Length: 135
Image: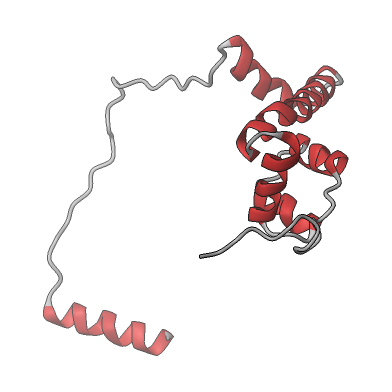
């Protein structure tokens, strides 16, 4: 049977830079990406969150990722208001219900006539030879 080691006898705990984790959450980094930046495993990050912050990564991320989205949205609005046509169109579609419409007239008459005929064996051979000569 395994017994618990007395405190202070195990591997030292890795110190986590929580300010850096929070900033990485704000720019929408995944847990794996954050762990990689910190040079730890994702499991270590999760255990540290449970131990030190009493939360899961999903909850911590949800709490700390909104500021980055708000900053990005603010910058997009600023760029649109400064005259960026692509952002003006995109934001109009997202927030104003605008959409691209294509007016297709179904009453147009097809004036092109296409005739399909079967090729003769000679024409098929000539086409094969021309293809082979070309390639």
